Image (cartoon, rainbow, N blue to C red; front, top):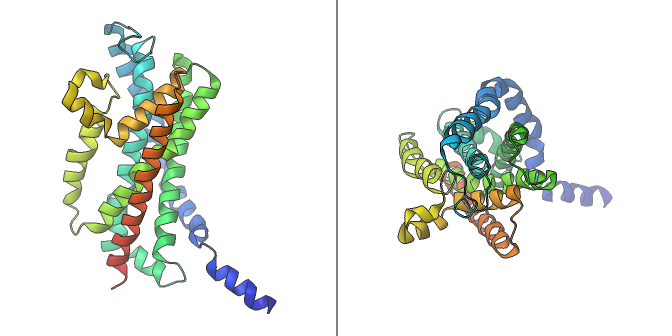
Length: 269
């Protein structure tokens, strides 16, 4: 009887954790290719946009959402935007390729693993990658005096996996749903690039005018940028923070359901 109960518990337990060694092996073989994007790019962003370009921008906390300098304003935006960009890079061609070219997911589903295990494990892997890259970004930013307190730096870092989740599951769903890799050109040009440019990372969205400002406030990246900026500058307001957290969690949850549904349609026929 004990053996039967134990057997049932094992079968009912999530199996996504069983793929940890697989993703660790993938990262161990590919981490060198991510050095530039994860470690060098943050430093170049801060130096070029924050320090050099920021030297020509008159710092007025009233117009820069409380930031005393332009580098303090733009640095949190770049941190949140970098988290989003990593998600697009990790879950677009990689997901599509594992379905259409490498058949990796087909092999996984031939084992006791299910579709939900595959989605959960890969999203968790990407969130871990984002957290690691964000930690490096925070370390790079620290000497520039952009953090109001060490606690704010830690909270800004902890916000990055949530921001990544809001993009990870929808991007996974899109990548599992499309039938041609040419669709990713549209994804990057019509989704990622406008989000990157017009979500308040580089200038206050109030400059866009009333209509476009409203559209920008619907952007998940703007919620991530504003959340990161408040934590970084120490200008936290409970109400807006709760709105950001709920918005990002709901988007991540809806995206997860869509991702499971799209991958199920591709693998279970």
